[in-house]
Structures are given as structure tokens and as C-alpha cells.
Length: 341
Image (cartoon, rainbow, N blue to C red; front, side):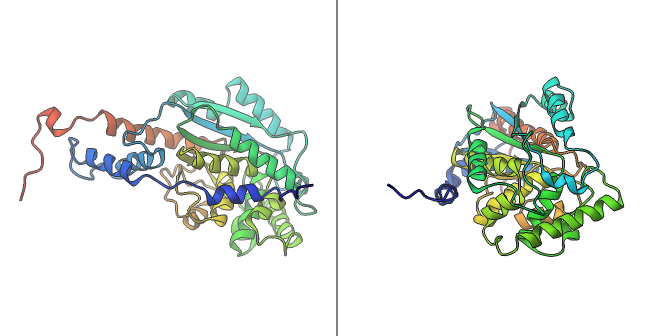
């Protein structure tokens, strides 16, 4: 019988095959930017965004025709340690709210013309309590990663990522503690609004989880399966699938960036096709973005999750595209260009 490869080997193989950006497409955007009716560089990061989209879509004329917000939802056994201000049942209730159109993300998507898909990742079977066991078995983690990869099917040309899961800021803090060191208190914040006692329990849970799995955390994929959860694995899968399909990605906040950090730990170039939508009010997110090498588009004090910050950042991206494609050139508008010295 043929020897079966370990489940994570296929992920590593894909990482090795990631396409790079198209410099020719980026230069085509710069050439157009140079003749638009504005001083050179006057639109700042908006000009960079247009070039970024072109480079990763590998199209001299980038498009945003099928933008999507994908929200992945999972539950976590670590909630039993009193780390959240809300019970795990709220995850299911919020998914129902998304379906009914009553959440913040529904309103933001409607305002900006964004598609929205929400994925229930076996909410009735929470990932195991990471202070006592690995969150997921290896095959389960690999299968959830693969599910995330498949979730972006449908000719999406820009992907905004979000999550929902009571307890998942504790999960994210444990991932950062494992990847970046320091103390648990460096990474654990108030999440959904825990009081001082709740924060102390959260810090203790992060410390206990990393200590329990110590010796098995040198591999980022083991960090994902031992300390993460289904939404972490699925988001990581979606990010990698987007890279393979040349789809630019907008990252949301603290939890989504924990999934991104797994890929970044595997390969420092794995997030080159990603933009940080915002820096959240969750204390350590700014430091996380620094380590990922990402400058956020927005700083609005958000800590909601749901993909809300990424979706709001899409408004800026949409404006960048409108300026790039819709502005007249100096020749079109019969406006005198910059005089030669």
C-alpha cells in the first residue's frame, strides 16, 4: 500500500508554489497615475493601492467586480475557563443575526456593495479546551484549512476576511504568545469586554495553554491546530487559496491576523498579497501588525470582529480604484501638465 503523507504536507507544498506579484502590471498603473489630473503622488496610499491590486491580480487594469466578505465562525472549549464576557451560545445567536441582516457587518456590506458569506464551522462541536488538549486533531485541522480554501470559489476578485467566535481573542493571544514569546499578559486583552477578574482568567488560560503544549510549538501548523480553532484554520486556508488564485486580501482585526500570522511564520512572503484593513482597539494588535509588516488603512477604535474593519477599509480601496480608473488624464481634460524645468 502507498504511504500516506502527513495531512499538513500538502499545505507546505502549496506554500512553496505561491505566485509572486506582476511588476509589469504595477508599472502600468504607475504610468497611468503619472498622467492623471493631479500632482504626482498627491493621492498618497490610494495610488499605492491601485498598484497593489494590479500587481496581485496580474492585470494592468485592475478590477473590483466581485468583492466578498467571508466570515468564519467557530466555538472554543477554552470558554469554560471564564475568559469571555459572553457564553459560547452567543456565537450561534450572532450567526442567526447575520442571516437576518441585523449585524454591523450586514450594514457595512450593504453600504459598500460587498457580498457576504458566513460559514458555520461545526459550532455545536467546539474545539477542545487548549489548556488541556490540542484544539484540533491534525486531520481535522487540515480538512478545515482545505474548507477555507474552497470557500472563496466563485470568481471573487477581492476578499475581506472576518470571524465570529466567543473566546477567540484568547485563542489569538495564545497563538501570538507561542509565535512571538513575551508574556501572556503582553498578548491578552479585554476582548468582548471582560472585567479585571475575567482578564486575569484569560491571561492564566493563555499561560496554561502555551505551557501545556510547550515542546510542540516550533511548527506554525502545530501552533494552529493545538492553540487555534476551526475559524483560524479556515481563514489561513482562505488566505493561501486567495494567493494561489491571485486574489488580493483585506485582513480584519486581532483574530484574523492570528490566522495570517501562522502563514507568515511559515513563509515571510505569504502575506504579500494582503492589506491590513485596520488596527483594532485590542491592545496587542498594533504590535502584531508591526511584526507582520503591515500598515493599517484605518484606525477607528474598532474591536467588533465580523470583518467590520476589513469591510470599512474596502470603502477606501473602492475609492482608490475609482480615482485610478475614472479620473481624466491631462490630455483628456486639456489641462496643462507639469512644466519641464
